[in-house]
Length: 126
Image (cartoon, rainbow, N blue to C red):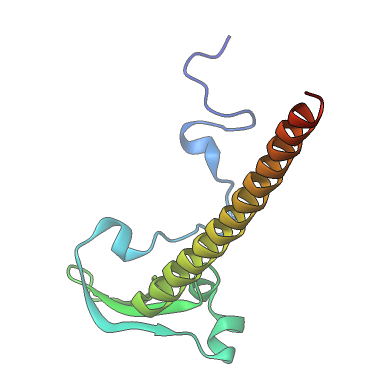
C-alpha cells in the first residue's frame, strides 16, 4: 500500500514530470511581492483572444514583481464592473420585492372578499 498518496493518478516526487515535458511557470506574483504598474483596465478584443489572463473577468492589470523585476499581467476585478453588478442585483431584488408585494395585496383582497361573502351568506340564512 502507498502511504500519503494524493489524488488518483498523482505521482509524488521526481516522477511527477516526465523528461522533455514543458514545465508550467508559476507567475511571479504568486511567490513575490509586486507593484501594480498599470491599473485594472478592460481587455481589448485582441487581448481577450490572445491573453489567458483576460478570460476570468475581461480585465487585466500590469504588475511588476519586486525581486525578479518581471513585468506580467494579472486578471483583476474592475470597480466599475463590480458597481454595475451590484446595482443590477439591487434592481433585480427590488423588482422581485415589488412583484411579491403585489401578489400579497391581491391575495389579501381575494381572502377579504371570500370572508365578506361568507359573512353575507351567514347573515342571509338568519
